[in-house]
Amino acid sequence: MPAMQFHKPTSLDEAIALLASDPEAMPLAGGATLVAMMNAELIEPSALVSLGAIDELQMVEAAADGGVRIGAMVCHAALAADARLAAGHAVVRQAAAEIAHPTVRNIGTIGGAVAHGDPSSDLPAALVAADAVIEAAGPAGRRDIAAEDFFEDYLTTALEEVEMVAAIRLPASPAGAAGHYEKFARVHGDYATLSVAVMLAMAGGECSFTRIALAAAGPKPVRIEAAETRLVGSSLDDGAIADAANLLVEASDPVDDVRGSAEFRLMLVPRLLARAIAVARSQTEGGGA
Ligand SMILES: Cc1cc2nc3c(=O)[nH]c(=O)nc-3n(C[C@H](O)[C@H](O)[C@H](O)COP(=O)(O)OP(=O)(O)OC[C@H]3O[C@@H](n4cnc5c(N)ncnc54)[C@H](O)[C@@H]3O)c2cc1C
Image 1: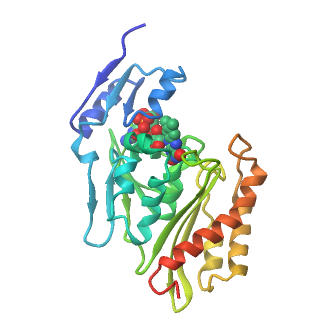
Image 2: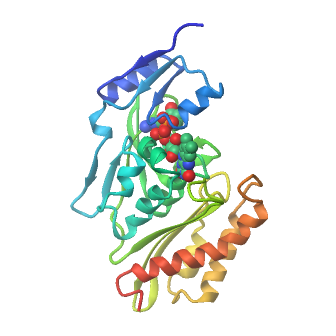
Image 3: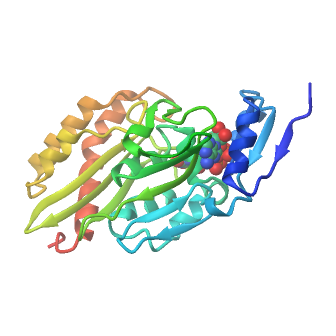
C-alpha cells in the first residue's frame, strides 16, 4: 500500500489544485471526524490536504451592515466565545457552545461540520435558522449556496467534487431579533436527540419575523415555511406554537437510534419549540414584556 501523502497548502487555490490532482485526496480540517473514520477504516484517503495554514479560512469578520463572515477553519470554541455573534446570530454561537466537550470544540471546525452534513450535528440547523450562506470554492471558482439548499440528505451536501467550504456568511439579522438554540441530549456533551434552532423578532407584541430549524429530526435540517408563517403576526400564544409544532412534526422524519426513538423525537418537537421560542422572545427588543 503506498504511503499516505500529507500536504499543507497556504492558499485555497493551492488546496483546490492538490485536491483536483488526486481524486482520492481529502481536505483535513480539525480531523475530529475524518481521523475517526480513518481509524475505523471507513475511508482510506491517498492524501490529506490540511487547511490549517490557509489564513483566509481562519478569520471571523463582522461587516458594517451587521452581517458576519466566518472562515471555514474557525473552531467551535472560538465561535462559542465570539461576542460578535449576538442578537439573531446568537443561535449559531449557542449551537457551537453545545457541541460535545471542550476538546472537540477546540478541534472541530465550522467548515468540517458543514461539509460533513450530519443532520444530528448542531451547526447545520442553526445555520439554516440564521439564513446563512455557504461560500463554496472549487476549480470553477466560487459560488454561494443558501444553507437551506446546501444540506441535501444524510451526510450529503450540495458541494461538487473537489469543491470546498471556504466560509459561512450570516446576513444581518432583523432589527431587534434574538436567536436561541435549544438542545436535548441524553447526557451533556452527547449528540442531540433533538434540537430546535430559532431566530425571531417582535413588534408591538406580535411576532414580526421567525426562522425555525430542527436538528436530528430527519436526513437534513428540517425547516418548514408554513410553521413560520403561522407564528408571524401571532402573539406567540400557545395555540400558534402548537400549530407550528404540528407542521414541523409533519415535516420531520427522524430515525430510531440509541439517542431516542423516532416517536420520542417527535414528542420533543412541541416541547423544545415552546421553550426555544420563550427564551428567544425574552431576549428580543421589547418582546419579553
Ligand atoms: C467525540 C465527538 C463528539 C462530537 N459531538 C458533537 C456534537 O455533540 N455536536 C456536533 O454538532 N458535532 C459533534 N461532533 C462533530 C465535531 O464537532 C466536528 O464538527 C466534526 O468532527 C467535523 O469538523 P472537523 O473540523 O473535525 O472536520 P474533519 O473531521 O477534518 O472533516 C470532516 C469531513 O469534512 C471534510 N472537510 C473538512 N473541512 C472541509 C472544508 N472546508 N471544505 C470541504 N470539506 C471539508 C473532510 O474531508 C471530512 O470529509 C463530535 C465529534 C467527535 C469526535
